[in-house]
Length: 217
Image 1: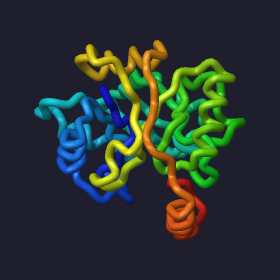
Image 2 (image 1 turned 120 degrees about the horizontal axis):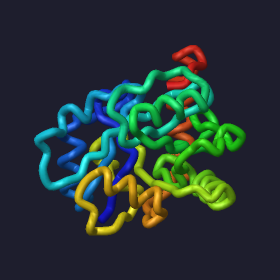
Image 3 (image 1 turned 135 degrees about the vertical axis):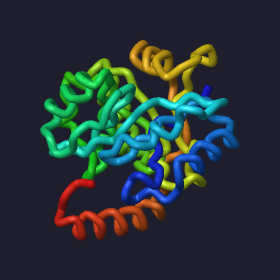
């Protein structure tokens, strides 16, 4: 079963598709699971109670003071702006696991020094990261002995599934998905960001970063 564990709906300030549009896109592309990881908001999951035919993992992408952290399996919104260790503690207190998001993305990644032992896993394949950055994250995961995840980081329905986590077909709920991740029973795949896309994405992201007063999203 393919799972896209990193997508953003219109609840993210840079998301361009609704929750329902993201879910429908995932179904059309044959995904069996998604995690809607909106930036610093935990609203999308409330809209998925009656969704059938796909597993939805409760999630959020949290802007810690040190970079982005993916929270899976949480039961409430995680406050932004805290240090990386406090952010991880808040995620654990909310019943979730903390995953270092795209750690080598320089304007929003944590950077290697901030990927501390308290993390439960590391995102090693992100479709909006370069092949080099993803390979570095893979090596870091191996070095630290941490499980890993992958996801598209889609902000539009058309990009859902461009990177993914392959999980066992016998999972039946999001709790099982997390168990398989922590057990290391997953693989990742998809496409990396191209050089052309890097130039466009870098210009857009840096411009928005300056517009936010050099504040992480």
